[in-house]
Length: 554
Ligand code: ATP
Ligand code: MG
Image: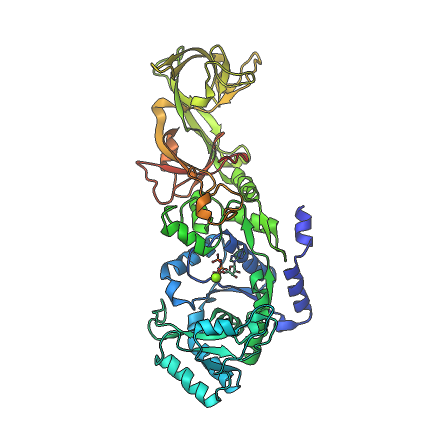
């Protein structure tokens, strides 16, 4: 498996290696990650980030982080900042290669003037509805605008007036003059510039015309001399336009657009527009809600960058769209957390257990390994005393067959401590068990007996007088359906039980000092991480990152 991973090249690596062998681009590899700062990044973006930065790393190249900020109304500084944080958190570094498409607005304008001079662009005064109507359909060719043959002089004047703010929004646009009969609708005189009286988060009110994505993106790639412009499949039909823009503006660069399949995950919606709706309409607490598939959300939930890298490597890149099972991401996560998370004992749903024959004020300290997978992580001392807490589900008055936990007359091991046998229990008026009374075997210290007597069950526990109370947040999938959009609106498929808050979990004292984002395995309960936003020493809050086994339930 490991070997295959290094030997088998994906189709993008093959293209790059052929280019390098042919001496194209002077042997350079320059990729870019070009997010639009109109929302927080999600796991899909992580795939693209790992791919772009990974390729550059592999071929000794560089990756530019470029904000495609050509759409002033939807973009915010907060988004741009969060994107930088997320890319860094994933472990990638753009060095001094941080760019904004808006830095090129002046250049892009000049190139548009050049296109007009070459009779390859014109100002169209049709309104947007007419432009759409004239564009034709997949089966019918488009129709030329009556303004298509304006003179170069007139076009230059009109375009200058557009920039000067002399027209209203929608009154005219700049279009490329390509081919209204092209079978590819993208080539039917696409709009290059539109008028928008909107303040831009970086250029303020300097501009009232803004370049369209296809034009700005292709030219930004060319200006930065990007060699391999990797994007998702929906841009395949835009590639001829991408090439047209680079060629006709005569920029000295040969960026090659390469498309791959976007990542889709089961039980997840993954478009910024949809995620924004979840935030705006209050279905989640924010972009970084631990249930969100955003990078900030999964970070807060406790995911590791290494697990995401491994996931990206395993899904690879393909040319055909598919849906990846969320369980694969969780598998990568467990593998990674198993190696790096220290073990702790935490009782989520506490039941008091009193050891009758244990001296009242005695406390013993047992050694517990921090991670049996990695002994270099050392041990810690855990206190044991007469009163401990166990999980409610670890005791049953009337157990079914094959129940290996505690029941009247039964015996279990308290992890790292002693064997205890249930001799009695107490209930409240409603019959709920409120306390289990046990006797311990002093000869089973450390959890083993000299006579070799075996018990089937081992319970985790916390000493009552050495415990802290913590809040634990358990998460389930945000959506009930594998495809949340199966029957239209994904809001209808929201899982109302996606968050369960436990306010009286009992934990080892040492967890009071855990740092934000620090991760642990709570024995038998899964991997947890300190909530970076709401946890405090007075009230520690832990998010369950993932359960120990695939136990998806809704
Ligand atoms: P969304 O639809 O979620 O808003 P987008 O493509 O509009 O995504 P951009 O900010 O334009 O978001 O994307 C930046 C880069 O991330 C692009 O190169 C895009 O192709 C890539 N990308 C976005 N979504 C995915 C995905 N699900 N899988 C892989 N790459 C993606
Ligand atoms: Mg987009």
